[in-house]
Structures are given as C-alpha cells and as structure tokens.
Image (cartoon, rainbow, N blue to C red):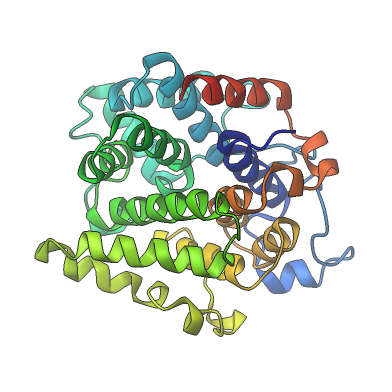
Length: 329
C-alpha cells in the first residue's frame, strides 16, 4: 500500500496532468459538446496527439526537480535549472524523449540561462511573468521543505525563501513566488490534517493553509499589494459558492490557483476533483496538476483510479523516484 506523501502528491499531480493533456486548449463548451461528451477517464489524442497516460511539462519539471532533490540532498536552484535545460533541449524527464508544451516564460528563462547561466537573472520579473509554470512544478520542493522542517527544525522563513528561489529560476515576480509559498502552507496543512485521528474536511485544511500563508506574508508590508490578487482564496466558504462561469482557467497563475482550489472544495473525491478540473477547459493539464497534488495528499494514492495509474507512461520510474524520496527524506 503506497500511503507515503511522495506517492500521494506526485502521482496525484502526474495523473491530473495526463488526464488534462488530451483536452488542453479546448474551452469548456467545446469539451461538453464533443461527440464523446465531457472527459470521464484517460484519453489519447489532443493537440499533441499523445497516447493515453502521457504527461506534459508540468510533470516533467516536477520530476526533474524531484531527481535533483534526491541527488543533491538539497533544493539547489542551479542544479534544478540545469535539469530544466536538459528537459527542454534533450528531452530528459519526458515520456518519449521529446519535450512538448513548454510555457513561454519557462522557455524564455531556459534560453536566458543557456546564454548566461546565472540563476539570479534568468527568471522573468515583469508583470507578464505571472504564468502558472512555477506553481505547477513546486510540489516536490514543498514536500522536501515540509520533511526538512519536521526533521531538522528548518525555520518557516528558510522554507519560504527556498521555495521562492526555486520558483524564481523561471518566474521571479513576487506574485508567482507568493502563490508557491501559499501552496506550501496548504501542502503542510493537508499532510498534518490527514495524520489526525479524525481528519478534517479538505476545505477546512485548505482554509488553515490559506490563513497561515496570509499571516506569514502580511508580516512584510511590501507584500500587501500582491496579496490583494489572491483575495478570493482567503474565504473559502464563500468562494465555494462561486459559479462555474466565474472560474477562469487561463495560464495566469491566479486563475489556475483559484480554479484548482475551487475544484478541490466543490468535490468529494480525487476522481471527481480531477474530472471537474479538466472539464473546465483551457489550461486543463496544469489546473489538474495543481489540484491533483493537493487532492492526492488528502485522499491518498489508493483513491486515484487504478485504471488511470495503470496507463501512466514511465510509471515504474516515477514510483521508484517516490520510493527513494520516502527513504531519503
């Protein structure tokens, strides 16, 4: 039985990513009106004409990050960025030896790094650098710092600074980094909540994570302007009543984060959450990956439909990385 947090989170992310690939860039009306109707399980095809169970850039970058954590025994932004180059240029960390679906901001950062290998300057800092390409891959770093905090009393500041550094190699704007930091607090809340004798509802744990993140970032007055962009996520009981037509699924990090959280708090299982996420349309793989990591942590590996896991490309390699992480951290 694979109940450790690495299996739960990483497989939750990767399965969500793969579920969304075949309908990526289709809007929700197009998905609904397809001959086969809304997504009900793993499919093949899509823009990239991939076999079922194929994961994209979200999982590739998360897996590159995980392997770096395992080999370096630390969250090393230089090593992680070097692995992103190998992914983009050589097809490492991909199902078929070829990268696809690279985000613009991630690609630009990689090209900047190739020209000048300085992790302090390769990540974009402009307003338009707030795509979801850091949030979609940050889960293994969150899990690493959670385990490190628990075992060696790493401070909260050190964890957030590390998460910001890893986000910043591609997305170096505070808004994107803050989303990754708040995601960390949600990860932490879910892990600790699921270890209680009576497990609280997912919405309660996510609200605790949001509250903790909000309290943390409010300590610095310079964060307040950016915090306003996350306002809808601060009161989840209200946000859960938001109608679907008010949920956006673009590549903008705030839209993706909101959509992922909305799917988590308006469903009652991993399967239901993932199907809701991908049937929202547009950036389906990333919204499902962001939600899937948290859903996997809450519901557990065993709650992921086994027929979905069975077709995941490179499943044995992914599971071996998760086993290594369980032993290492």
